[in-house]
Amino acid sequence: MSQVHEPIPTREPRFQCIRCGQMCQDTRGLSNHQAKCNVDPRFSCKFCKKMCSSAQTLYRHEDKCKAIRSAQLEIDKINKLENLSISLQQREEEHTRFQEQILEYQKHIQDMKDVIQELKDIRQTQEQEISTSASTIHRLNHTIHQQQNRIESYQDLIAEKNERINHLEEQAKEDRKIIFDFAFKTIELRKQAQDNQCF
Image 1 (tube, rainbow, N blue to C red):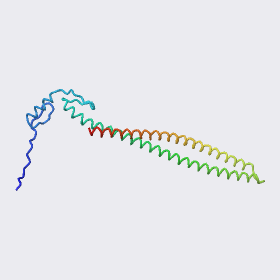
Image 2 (image 1 turned 90 degrees about the vertical axis):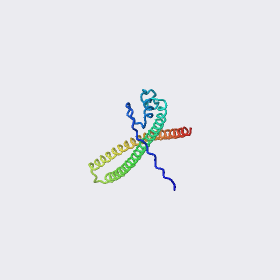
Image 3 (image 1 turned 180 degrees about the vertical axis):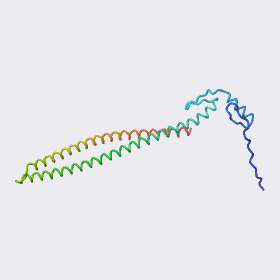
Image 4 (image 1 turned 90 degrees about the horizontal axis):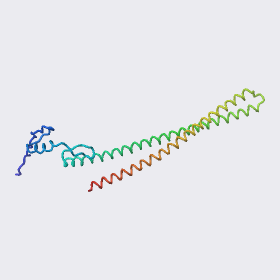
């Protein structure tokens, strides 16, 4: 029969440091701890400026702190890239919206041109008729003038939208360049991090 080994019970820490409250399992452990605890911290972490009481404690702390800081830098870079991507997407959506508005304005202009042509045809017909009154011709001319003014207004709006689209396209080019540069730098940093881990 194979013997069943019962697990060795671990002792609960019973000795407490009066300075920091840390619990130790025996007096030897408490003495070792107090030898370090009673020393004022004079070793500063170069990453977070935390003070440690010994070089060994500082070395262990900096090893963890460096990894945390590197991970946070990676997260910050990824967040920045995501924000730039969102901004670029918003500009592209605005660009599309402006293009749709321009198409709509162009349709209105074409409709108004058709109306103007129809009014011109009516005016020509009225002029050819002997019974055409001067008041009718004047009214048609006034309506044509109003339609022409509206066409000029829509043409001004189109010019403004085209200028805004050009500006958005320039911004989109800059954002794409920034995203590419950040992505390239992130790849280099990750490669450097992998190379450092290999060492």
